[in-house]
Length: 264
Image 1 (cartoon, rainbow, N blue to C red):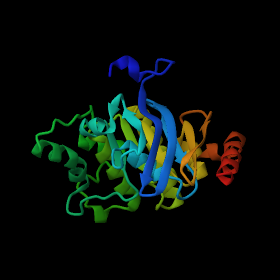
Image 2: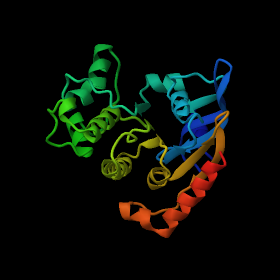
Image 3: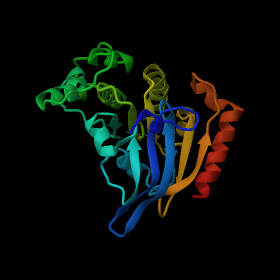
Image 4: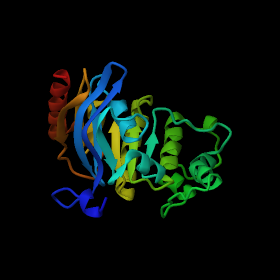
């Protein structure tokens, strides 16, 4: 596919395109007729009731589950081709670090695997050491996972995801198990990372305030089967700080999204 097919009418690059995509597990339709264009460099958050297919949507985009109908493209490639080209990376709820490897060695792991398999891995301007500094772990490079807090382990996981310079970062409730203060800190840090790298982000959350605070756009899914309820553009200034959550515009978005969620 040539570059022209990657652009929308405004001339911006489309990072992920879903065209009438559906997912089925046996007789169960998990997602139905999802049609979206996600522009490169955007930060989308995904909300919806339990069982609406938020995580399934990320797995569809990441080639972990196939579409039953429709299609998905990442930067004009099939999801399989995009996966093989390391166009995207996935950060799960659990950091899934190897316990016998230091923070630095965990970040380096995708590069090591690529070298052993003879796969050319794209790397960015930042080394694994610099990525750990970017996520706020300078000085903890040699710490083992059990020596790090839950928030620190998730930061290592984010650095590991960024080491191959993905153009799309998929995040499935990565901060859901953390305490509120740690979560707020990592929200701020993630926004800094997004602005520093320009990576497109799709971020699943159950938290309305988190969805608004992080997202440029909030995708609301409804359940049975999972399908698009609405896409809400968040017109709040960048950079953002925690005080934004006390402002009337932020609270208006909270009310709007809570009402939409109740309708799902």
